[in-house]
Image (cartoon, rainbow, N blue to C red; front, top):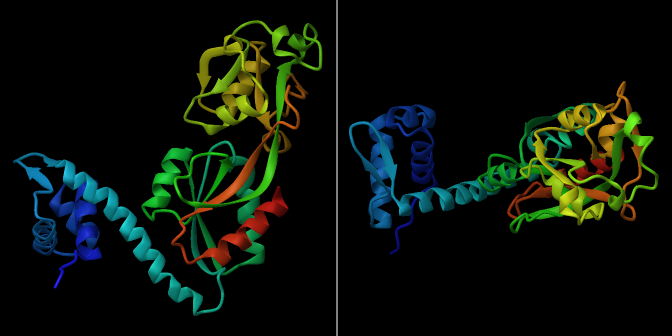
Amino acid sequence: MNKWPSLKQLHYFITLHETRHFGDAAEKCFVSQSTLSKGIQNLEELIGCPLYERDKKTLVFTPIGEKVVEQGRELLAKGQDLIELGSLCQGDAMQGQLRVGCIPTIAPFLLCDLVQEVNQTYPQLTLLLREDTTTNLLAALRQGQLDVLILALPVDIGGMESLIVGHDPFKMVISKDQARSISTPIHYDDLPDEYVFLLEKEHCLTDHAVSACKLTKKEKINPFTATSLHTLVQMVANGLGTTFIPQMAIKHGLLDNQNLVVVEPPGQEASRAIGLVWRPSSSRLQAFHQLADIVKHIL
């Protein structure tokens, strides 16, 4: 008869990986240190090779141990989805907690309205929010730390499910002083080199804007990159160049009281898609679709 590792053993080992300390891991798992150590020892015996090395000061995880952590997180996420099937028996998908991740170029301009709408329409549902980059949010989704994401698409979601809920047009912004010397509609050939400022590559907005707005001339892009839309706006307002700003940010006042002009970028109907993303194994599909309806209404 085959023996299988338990989800509890995987939970012990993954927590040890996160804390790098047996005592801290046991405390987080609400078990004694001996129970945690025994569970991890049993896991090693089942797998048949060492998962970590230990000296007096540090824990070093073997390549196999790292693989066990990676795959174990996915198994724990699917186990959580299995347990959540019980909520379907209650008949109301919009209750309890829903852990939502959102990227920084959407979160400040959507989440406040989303929380207010959910509180009014579904008072039994609590949204737990996390703002982070697309890469980090997708990792958290796979590991079961989040239930659903609000992302800008297209992006590689690695086998996750998605649903587009709206489109967010791009606009170009430029200082009023600089606008006097540049004819509209804008052509990139008319702009000085290194005149277009963008966000750091960690933000998918950069790739979406460059693609949607047909910016193919790399010499027009300034090598300096900003960490936020607010930084971009300040740079452009001070006459350093131009940048792309999503319409939802403009609608929510990002350009208020700034010495800026908004113009249409090159590229026909330049925009990014806004979508919800979730694990295929999740049992909360009904909740995701109802949440999608709310986001569509807000957009």
